[in-house]
Image 1 (cartoon, rainbow, N blue to C red):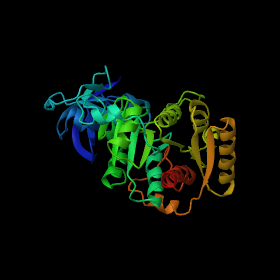
Image 2: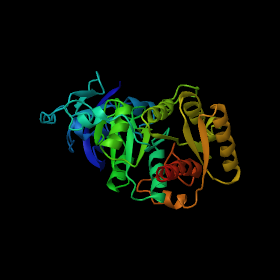
Image 3: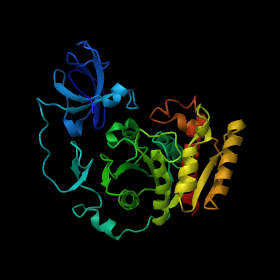
Length: 372
């Protein structure tokens, strides 16, 4: 961990649970490794964790990812306001610790623990009752899946279950904040080590059950938070958990739907058409029956995706079933999104296939619900 100290100059941006500041680094702490005292960086503060910095406050920063140029949006993170600590939260129920055994571990009331008012419901709940569960690899698929749901049924209650493969704090995601503010999702449940949703859950399984039995979801979307990790190897990417999520949805009596990770704009051959992430997670990690909605993309990319999806189903030994989904109206639905669509730095115009594929999964989910 690489520390930096600095002084808050001004607030740049704010959304639910987080704010970004311009922070002037202390002398000798330039972000480029030099000694220029005028160095200024962007730093994100989780206000529920460290408090609310003001201009003039001295802050301690974690600059590790920023200095390495990793995918944190070009940000340092505020670790503490050493001269103005936030007041202690009022004592309350809950004893589930997340970000466990790290210096910033926190204690929450989990929806499934004994002190929760929902404990009795979840102690008895053991079935999702056929509710469709759309599983996606990347966080960027979330608004596109929801756009597809809304294209068919704007009144459908969509609940997002955020797993802990990417960002742990839900507050890092401006997507969640904007979708919630626009009433595109009914709530977020953060599971595992992820935290900061409308409800916390200890496991993915209780998170799914809470989505249906506590938040009364018509459709559940499961995906990791922002910040997918990949290594260019078959198994070394956090999206393998998408296969495990399909397993959980099936075991609990849901309707598992695998949203294909598709790209026509990614220069890497392993992600062209249907990504190798989908082929591994759905074809080798998932061990249960699931549906693969295949979008009618048209042209060369459409032919490629259709062929790859059929091969994936064949290789699964019949567990996976490909279903062709019409895409009429999905472009308009995607353009109505309250958040800017972006995947790996590419927007809707640069990688239409990525977003239409996710939207097709949402469209299919609504149809599977109404036809069941």
